[in-house]
Every structure is written in structure tokens, then in C-alpha cells.
Image (cartoon, rainbow, N blue to C red; front, side, top):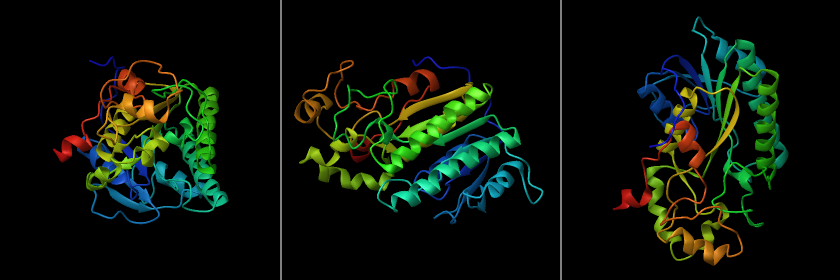
Length: 295
């Protein structure tokens, strides 16, 4: 049984940005199912009906973000924010465009929350801060939150800047809670059909130590972080409990990272992106596995 901190009641209005993205719909549904009044915000409508009011917004415009969280059109103000909106990976736009979109948008969310008196913000950081794509091997495995961030792309550099912003904003205001979730590669259930194609060549997925996060477990982590009785800045790796491979994790390491030391023993197919902190502090426990879904 994981040792968890007290959790707040599941209530209040939460703005979820990036609600139309890869992780957003699962988060909106999960929060609504657990008693949150959700406002879903994005530049484009969601691909499917969601149990939330949808608002079209450009997060690079601070005024729009302030209105989102303080209430508009006679709507109630938010009590919390989940910020998932971003250009979600390197290589999808020119580097300068990625940085110019992602970092100001996150600053605006943090700033608008302070203007509105909102103390509870959870946002999508990234596994890329661990040093992905691991062309330079990690300092040890399982990788965790203890070593300094190692951005290797402009996208990842932006995430490092966001975490540094959170560090200093909570230093200025110790009662503020800013939780960054370093999500692994987000997968939907229909994506599991491609996993068998990786089994004959583990090098295809060595770039993130064969990690992934089922969107439904990502949503669970968001809720637990939102409800956790924390203050200050915290970062958590969020991955599933296993890897994308059928092979044991130890054999993958022996083949692809033979010189990297083990921080602790690894067992079976367990994730090499350590979720120990999320388990211990948030009470996070993945409920889904691609291999179990296949079987």
C-alpha cells in the first residue's frame, strides 16, 4: 500500500486546457466522473462529445486566459487549472514556433491563476526532461526525478523553463501549488495494435526506455495531483507500470545500456521510468497495461 498524503475533496470548477489533444479527453471525462465541474478549453473543438462546457481560447493571449479562469459570460470562476495545451513534441513545428507557443502559454496560465487567486495548478511537463532520446545514456536506471533535467531539444528546453518558472513562482508564494507531471509517451487503447511490431527490434523504442502512459492512467495521475494536499512546486514522472516490450526490462538494459548502473533492482517487465515518487506521494497506481489488454 502506497503511503499517500491527505487529499482534498473532489469538488470545484476546473479549467482543462488542451482538452482536444491526445490526453485531454481522457482527463476531462475522468475528472467529470469524479465530481469536478469541468470547463474544456482549446483552440479547436474536441474530436468527440465531452461532459464539459467547451470554450475556444488562445492561451498565448493573457487576457483570454484570465477570463477563462476568473469566469466570463456570467460563468463561475475556476478553483483549479489543469494545463495540458501545447505543441506536444519536437519536430511538429519550427523550434522557435514551438518555444514561442508553449512557454508563454504556460506562463500565462500560471499568471492568470495568481491573478484569480487559484492555488491549485497541475500541468503537463514531459519525460523528455530526463534526457530523451537518451543518445547520451542516463546516469542510472530506473530514471527518476532526483537528477537535474537534461533537455536535448527546444521542445524539452521549453519544458525545463516551465519547471524553473514554477520553482520560482512557488518560492515567491509558498502557498501556491504547481505540480508538473512528466508524462511518458501517451497511448490510447487503439494504439496497442502497433506494439507487436516493436518486439523484434527493441532499438525502435530505446529512446524513452520503452516507456508509455495509457491516457486513462494519465488522467488518474492528473486527478490525484489535483486533489493532493501539497504546496510548492513538485515534479512527478507519470508512466505505466510496465514497458512496451514483452521482454524483461533487465534484458533490455543489458543489450542497450550495459554500462548504465542500476539504482535499484528491476523486476520482470517493470517500467524503467520510475513512478516510485508518484506512487508514494500521490497514491498513483496504473490500472492499464497493453499486454493485459491484448490477452
